[in-house]
Length: 261
Image 1 (cartoon, rainbow, N blue to C red):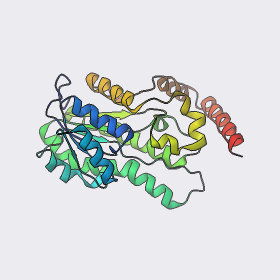
Image 2: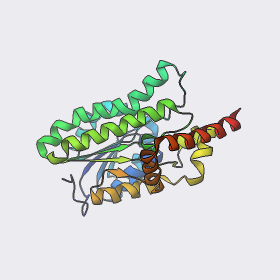
Image 3: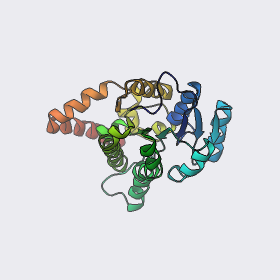
């Protein structure tokens, strides 16, 4: 079922969105180091070009809206995209009173960009009988995140979409991986402010550790990628006793309110 044998990534065509920094840049560098040809995508053209230049001959920058660059990325890779990493995301803070534009932006980037990319890629993958879709979700997609309703809800949506793809197409050669880290030392963590400081900062990891976790999951053809292994226990506790888990999270919410009030 795997797109590219993990013993040799050499020559594979890989697209990484949101690769101008953070997790995306770490993924792009790791794929290139393993011998893949990498399209570095970011909405910020300068950042995309900088990362591609750092990687060297194996990388090409294709800046722009992540959900609209599949055709250009395919051309840059000589006609074939073997692996697509839907890494671009927005960490939208907000609550039950957030305006529609905040929700719409989060849905568009965190969910619909994945849908549009797969719509462009899936026919070729099914015809070839191979393809690999990597979704950078977040532990918030398995659990939740205080102070960030649009982010939490749309990351749940991203996870649900990845799950659906896997159960629907795995027998036709599609491998799907959902990366669900907690805090990662990126600009998004910095932008999360006091909520991130309270919940995520203490156990934050480097982006390169996320890339390591993904490659381990690909080697095992494993859907769920947990760079923070403890997230598995949190997820199990949530499923086993939702009310207890919600009460615990509400205490975290109250503690956060105490620090922001």
